[in-house]
Length: 545
Image: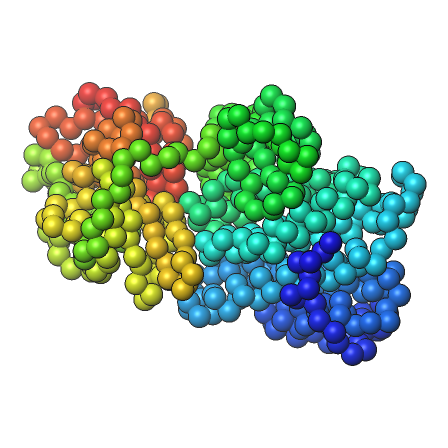
């Protein structure tokens, strides 16, 4: 039992934090810098866990203090990691390693406390609650360690799966798996060791390898807040379509049809969480201006809605299997990243009335769209990647080390596949690292004949710009760049536009598509996806107004 600790806990001499008072005094001397403070706290956790001669309750109380103090710094460091656009790559990697180390040390220290804790206690007794709290905190720390690895698209370590399995199995055996309490004073809801166990499993099943780190964090918060609603069973039952083997711990999975029952298997599912998520989606789709604070105020409601929809798909359906074989390519390809590059490289369609626009209108269009009318395909920087393999609507690529800082999930890519001259449009959907820490990506092909157009904002209903003109005598149009996808991997691709991020304000906005003799109009219907610098929007095509 607890073999997963042997690789992280060694034998150390006596420690100056011999009780809570001494620990609190030393912690007052922590540096103001969050990274340095986390590094010190991780070191304290490791030595407190390894020092012999501690009374079990004293060790547990010191570890709790270190954990709680460290989490105050961890939250700030995490947001710097997720949002620190000014970080250099080596700084981001260093910060990430500190976060991984912190949670590994927290999990290891609580694991030692669990080994020393007297099991059981009567149902409802303080002893039972204390034991359950240690188990829940250990499981949460292991889940957070796994999440840090998922931020960099690394596989969750086997020792983490083993740790989750051992701690949860012990919780069942000791009768504390369903003991409910707030694990930390600042928690919004009560939890149990079982819910903490499921947090790690459900996040791994949310396909983090296809999500940006910010979305992984949003998913983790949603799962944590709603975890009481997940279904769980020790036997195969209808509706529990997910499983984890405590006897052979590894990644959880969708249960294959006809799988024989095993005593060590645990079955679970989205359960009541499906209804709760759908209710949130429906509510905020109808009221996009209303704030949603349950999953943190650091993220927009648009981002949260995208993640909520993604979670339902992941938990209900197993990952799609590759239908068409990937053809080996292993040849160089040209690639540019970002929405502005795409708008400058793909074929642009202009409308006949452009010659009639005033100079002020042309300048305003240029300023708002971020591309000059005369510049088109000039001065767009490109890089060379290796196209490893390809199918009809996807390619696999090797990412050069110097491009790793910007190559992330949700990056829009304009590329010339090996042996072709046309510019295709795609987006990085999946990242993973091999055993040599080299990064690879799967790129979904959004369109093979994309078109770039200008949009002119018309407003909504009575707010339409042409109505403003008749009532006030003057108005200024809003212009935006857009990419028309046309034929794509999905049948709805022709009804989707790619626009600069945050161009989607609310459903119902009308734009004139500035092409042809009689420019058609589009109505923004739904925000489908939010990438690094673009929004994918479902639109309805209307005839000219």
